Image (tube, rainbow, N blue to C red; front, side):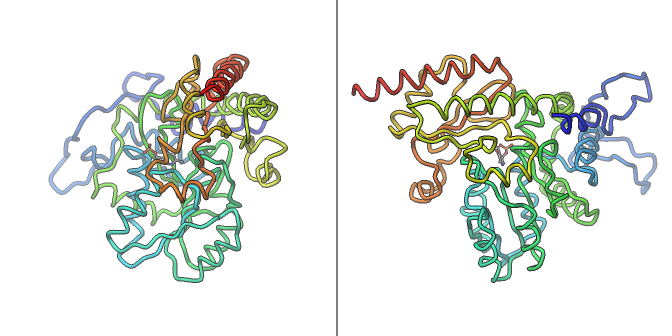
Length: 392
Ligand SMILES: *Cc1c(COP(=O)(O)O)cnc(C)c1O
């Protein structure tokens, strides 16, 4: 885990502005809509909190330092970051190529919303660079990659795909929500932009919803900031302050999330009630070599498939005692999600099944409780659920 330690100082102190007035160790929350103008026509650093805010900027500086990039831009939610990015770089008639397994909200935005503005999106298996290469034969403005993908954890070779996209003049964004810059550095691998739902690991405490975009291109950052002002998608100062506190323990948390997730995945791989386990840290994972090369550990998310479909998956969630059945991930509390009826219900059933988001799939966000208790809880729920389903 020593490489994770490299990030500890930046997670705690990166961009942390000294409080000039009282020397407070934590930055103040600038809970204000507006800032006094020194004189008419004289530009100040801050004018109005829809445009910029010092507390939000403190979070942006720290995230930017973690990525060795320009200061990040923070948004009200992850989806606010995604829509701001899309409206900043796309226009009517443009084409988007997106990983086929993605967060359901990204699929919905492209397929059901941007479609109406004549932005065409195609979804391809970016785990296969040949498939991406074929999709890029038609002019493409934006490539959206998600690795590991939500919820099957399929990986995309970010470096290979970024090179291909670049040859075709497309901009590459990587949704790095599952790993954060601590475990995976898409900008080093050639991506133009990284996208985060800070709601997940970056806050890490189930306290806020938020989003962020990071880039090393100052002109692109300015364009994104302009759109954020136009759309009004900025994060609130209070959420930015809470996220700054959560972020301090990011590298510590991700080390333990990864260790606990590996223990759970190993236990599930031995469990007779489990048909399949998806976890990039398992030796049996199909893309294990790519996982080793591209990310520092397997991450904190484990997906499993039970044979009895919706009925059995629902029974597992119902019988959990410690793990909470809920729709988030990346926080210190372990959560269990049923993607087919929750996060991915907006994806048509036929498409879902083809991508492996089957009715028996359960996604576990492995928290920081005692790993023995997490494993024991899921094992007892799997056993009770199996008995229940087989007796009906
Ligand atoms: C949750 C999530 C999002 C959307 O973020 P919100 O903060 O819920 O708007 C985007 N991408 C991934 C991978 C996510 O898990």
